[in-house]
Image (tube, rainbow, N blue to C red; front, side, top):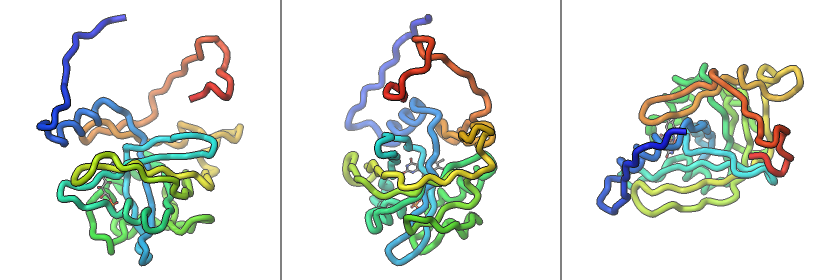
Amino acid sequence: MKAFDDYETLISAEREVRDNYMLLASCVLPRPIAFVSTVSAVGVANLAPFSFFNAAGAKPPTVLFCPAVTRDGTEKDTLRNIRETGEFVVNVVPYAIRDGMNETAFAFPPDVSEFDTAGFSMLSSRYVKPARVAESPIHMECKLTQIVPIGSGPQSSSICIGEVLCFHTARDVLASDGNLDVEKLDLVGRLGGDGYSTTRDRFSLRRPSGKSAPESNRG
Ligand SMILES: Cc1cc2nc3c(=O)[nH]c(=O)nc-3n(C[C@H](O)[C@H](O)[C@H](O)COP(=O)(O)O)c2cc1C
């Protein structure tokens, strides 16, 4: 295997946060996208994408995503709503809704619902107040477990951890064996800058033993 030449970037206090962000976002990719719906204390529905997102555990099923504080120190509506209500829904993003998803990333005021501005339809959730996105084939109804601060002040962020109470999976994206079909899902991922990827070019790797790993060793 080829060894690469090293190029170091030392993280100093003087370095622009934006440069750290750009580097990080180009190192960790493709990133899955959580299309998060919340509702404010006064009942305004909110919808926004977050690519600092992943699964965090299976017992109980847990997800996390990371809303940042803006340069002017404003907390995002999503985080404020979750603090207020303790609930959110993670919807997934297939290629078909990429433009609408992108539209919801505009910084609308808290009294504006991105469901309306971007033309998404709401489906009632079963166990939490925030609505599900009808145009997304998977919805995870979540109860807040913990908010972990990362830094403080403008451009800091938070890890928002939630337990999945209920998964909704559209029958259209199931394979004949009842499992989710990656091809039918056709989800997109975020790259650095304005780049995105699809999941259309796939391959498999067998675990080193030549057998499937035991359940406890999966990840
Ligand atoms: C694909 C995509 C991924 C994003 N990921 C994040 C993220 O991980 N963290 C973050 O703070 N903002 C992220 N953003 C920006 C937010 O979606 C944007 O700030 C949005 O307006 C927040 O909405 P809210 O104030 O209604 O919560 C992302 C935007 C896009 C288009």
